[in-house]
Image (tube, rainbow over all chains, first blue to last red; front, side, top):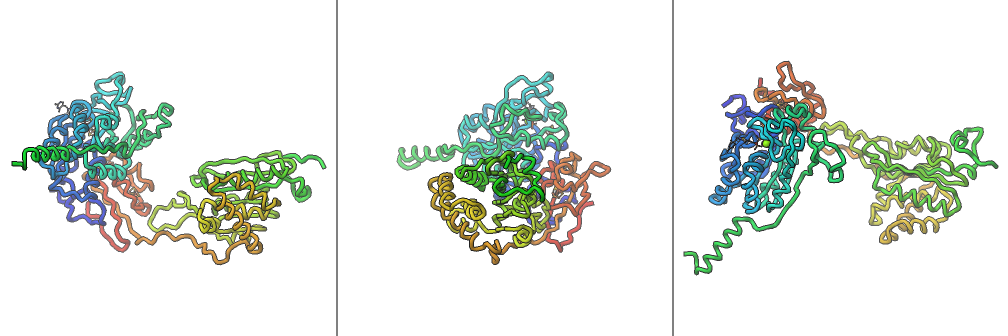
Length: 289
Length: 316
Ligand SMILES: Cc1ncc(C[n+]2csc(CCOP(=O)(O)OP(=O)(O)O)c2C)c(N)n1
Ligand code: SF4
Ligand code: SF4
Ligand code: SF4
Ligand SMILES: [Mg+2]
């Protein structure tokens, strides 16, 4: 281990120390300078720390992508699974080990494109776990292909003349598909993101938090969105009240987005419903033999 | 007697001082918003109009505490031309918040003007510019005594407190109307009639009581204009143990993204010759942790250590 990074040797003031949650031997992480995924990872670890989650009872599942890679740096039980399938994997994991806190970290490509099917059904089933969808509007890891959330007219390697496709609003899709906790926050507002994630993890049922994140190296460069500080500051200009929709032209993210808890539903949680049925069947058979 | 023109009104100096009858009465009402500046001015305008005056009223309601202004000019008399009161020509300055009263003081006529202010203080964000632990507020330090010494007639009262004791702190503006009523020439019953027609039916009683309380307070304090026993010391900053923020930078983890440098509100950081983040002005750091939150590479750690603690940077 990097001797200088030994957390035991750090001075402390009682505030959140991210080194307690990192696999220090893997640091510094592989993400590009200014990549928003790192900030999102901090917010997640901070939330887990404040919730007092036991690392041994925590399972973090992630798909493929820069977003998926973030799980590898967490000092807990982590699973880096097939592209698009972390929700499917996590569903099996949670059914087998309901005692674990299950978190899924995924990207816009991972969860809304190749894994769109699993996304819908995870929302529909309402199994108690939390999906953190790091939305950077692009396939970052594979060099910048268009994704289901790429803003109109943006340049990517597969849309050299500008994107023509309409976008998915991940939060609307999740809500429509039945998720019982839906929220959105930008990495710029790290403490708010931490609080939102705390609510999401504490929620009993399927929670989906969309994180507005920046792919500085690829999306930022290809679209001339400025350097890392300009990109993260521009998130603010996208946070607009409904009234401005259609009237204000946004420089970087033309779709204004609302942040915070956007939806809470009260459908029965999947395992609760499952256990109730098991009991009912056993009772009908005359005492579960 | 010929009609006065706006110019004459504005430039009425020592030689051409007009009599009360020809000069419009100027009342300037100021506040921070949400307190009823507009309601006060509407009551006054309506009352003056009912008494046969020509009335002009103009208002701005921006966010005073964010640097904008919330004020209303009411001018009434036999003939009124300009809708705005020239600087130094207000006969009454009525402030629903203390510092706003001080801000508009130059508009009050020092020879004949009456100053009426609520002593309640709503401290604006920009009075808290110094974000260091325990830093003093940038709010006006002048006390009602200091101010009343500078005006001919002045009333500084805790109108909000009076309204609160009547069960509705939002009636503070009506308490001030009660004080104002002693400075103008309208009958008590006319004031009450207009006030009652303006306030929501449910609050008629409390507003009536508030008006009478304010009027009675002004009559009782006609000579000094303030409650001597009111404690006007500014709230001291919350007693926190002064912390000395210290910023540790894990050089090996920094990727030179520049986010911390550009986002630090106090501009404490810079990139060094190797493009690695470096603290350049530790004395300006307030320990807000923004750099720590936004560093995508976890390279920054902000510690708020007790002032006596001399933890040294442990990294090269
Ligand atoms: C089955 C399969 N198909 C395609 C790929 C190639 N691939 C790797 S990452 C990725 C896209 C990731 O995009 P996103 O989920 O948005 O994550 P980001 O890198 O933007 O964080 C793709 C298509 C793969 N690894 N596996
Ligand atoms: S490619 Fe984009 S998303 Fe991936 S690490 Fe780099 S900046 Fe982040
Ligand atoms: S804590 Fe960081 S961002 Fe805040 S003032 Fe200090 S150096 Fe600047
Ligand atoms: S934010 Fe972090 S990585 Fe970026 S320049 Fe500052 S210390 Fe370095
Ligand atoms: Mg992506």
